Amino acid sequence: MKKLLSKIFVLGAAFAGLMSPVGAEEITADGLLSAMRDMTVSQGNKDVMGSIRKGRNKIPFSLSARGETIVFQYKQGNAWNRFDVRINARNVDLIRVVKGKAEVLAPANYTTPIAGTDVCYEDLSLRFLYWKGGKIINDSANSRVKGRDCYIVEVANPNPRIGQFGWVRMWVDKENGTTWQIDGHGLDGKLKKRFTITSVQKLDDGSWFFKQMKLEVKDPKNPSTNLSINYMEMQDLK
Image 1 (cartoon, one colour):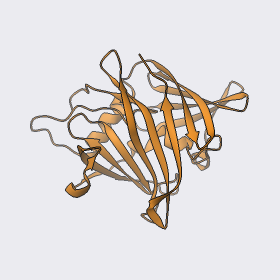
Image 2 (cartoon, rainbow, N blue to C red):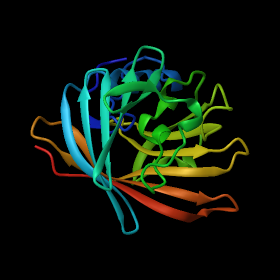
Image 3 (cartoon, helix red, strand yellow):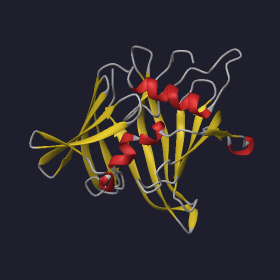
Image 4 (cartoon, helix red, strand yellow):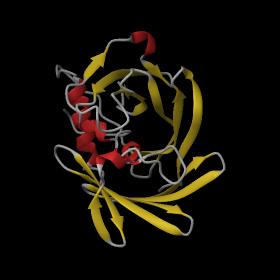
């Protein structure tokens, strides 16, 4: 697949902008996921500040990308907490750093909420990019997000005992590859969480970065109803 032109880097680059496949190349779900993974390690060095907001609860965070490692720190009370997302060719590892010592985060803690929000470690690592056997869903009636034509990519959790989702569905812009929306479904098929980019900003180098992303926690009895809403917001970048 061709190298990617426009970019939106977000907490592991799942919301990266991808260049549309051209010519006779076959478009596959695994190919799109592979391109997103490639984008994760080609973003270069970035340092950003932002916040996670749920109601009146606002948690400052910093994000530093260094090649294949993303260092995420969030402030709770007067203390800063850190964990790293380390990316390799086959997977992502979540590493919690406590008093300067690194320890691999146990899978049972992937879904631990961060600082009173509904955002968890798995949400930030977006590890489903490494799941295999995805498929493109032909659903033209629901393929538009924010007025954009999208590929709908669906991929199942290869180990349903780990994590909060049985499968996820992603909307990838056919023209510029931006991933506008990600839906996470439970093993029962019900929608649990929806991630949506609500605004973006263009940088001086021509790349793109998300400015605000909304995370909706859905009511299992009625997916059109939200139990809560969280926002991840970035400061303006140059």
